[in-house]
Length: 368
Image (tube, rainbow, N blue to C red):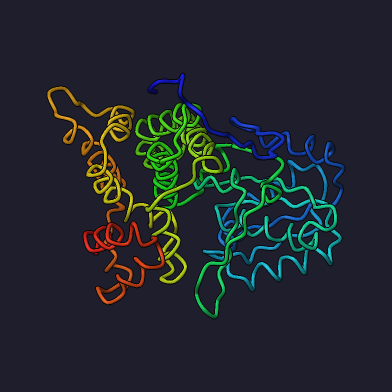
């Protein structure tokens, strides 16, 4: 950790009140709704969950009361039109709480619905309960994004009041999640953790959580993707996603996230897949600027570093990510999504400041 006697920094907590975790933890939903004084909860989710699983019914059963309504029109990257319609329907239903069910898009959408219904928090905000079914960790974030369908660009909001008040990490709710989505969102959590460790603002408290998240994902993500019924491994990945995001408010994210934000909405690439595309290559570039942080990551991954010099030991961290992405069947190139060499300079400009533009461009050329 270095010389702690000269260490200084700041860690900010988000106003998440409770996290329930474990098998059948969703059974405490009724208790939480009672505590929040909600008799008319409104559910925000996506079409696949609503039409191809029984999760909406399980949520209503666990709520112990009839839902005021269900909006299942949330799509990938949270298009603005869906969020506006969810806001309208929740208002008409006289909802007194929101429950989001799904991955990052339904959870982010519910955050923005809370913001809209409160007139940008000028009025008391509805309580938001998040039940994630992926490993995106959006439920632990104070940020939310929606896509402007005209420009195909992501519009972002950041405010500590956007974070859900209650989170349920129930592995049983994740069983219907498609394998590619579970695996790729796990790589997204890995991206959070790696960039937290590599951040110029890294700090010991965040390091401990991020490195444990990396260890848990390398030990459990592949197996939990192959066998969704292994609820112990699914829960281990959920805990890793939680830990991976513990430092984002305090230490920030890096180039992998920045590129992902730029290419995700414009080319309709899921954010988990953007991390599969960018993370290992960004880590390789990071190795040229310093090795100590990446060596910590390589050790957390379980890489064998005996006999390697510092540069090679640092590069092992990126090799570990490459191997995990390939093992999940998620190895892709930018060209698979219609991105051409002519697009790279614009993506680099939008993703990085002048200091990191050249590095961003190198990353993009390497993964084209």
